Length: 89
Image (cartoon, rainbow, N blue to C red; front, side, top):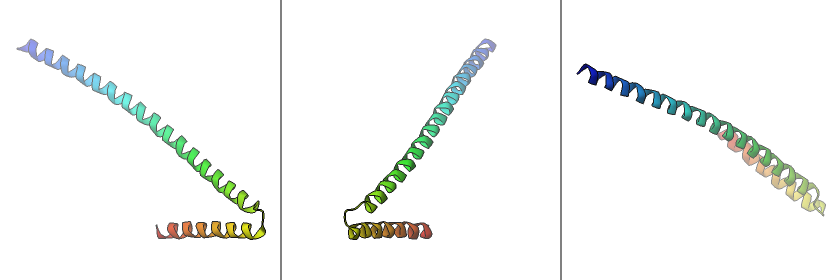
């Protein structure tokens, strides 16, 4: 009976160590995923900024001044919409 209890304790300790190692592996994996997510969010922000820059460049390089004014007015309306959405939040 005592030997059986010892065997059970050894099994429990082995299971505990295995779960502990798995927990640590998952923590490392989570950390890696969080870092990857942060890097991807940064890249998204940079690309969105580049898109806006290109939109502005395109608006100011339009062939006719009327086209440029229309594009700038459109961008201003988009910015105003964004500001109103932010104010509502």
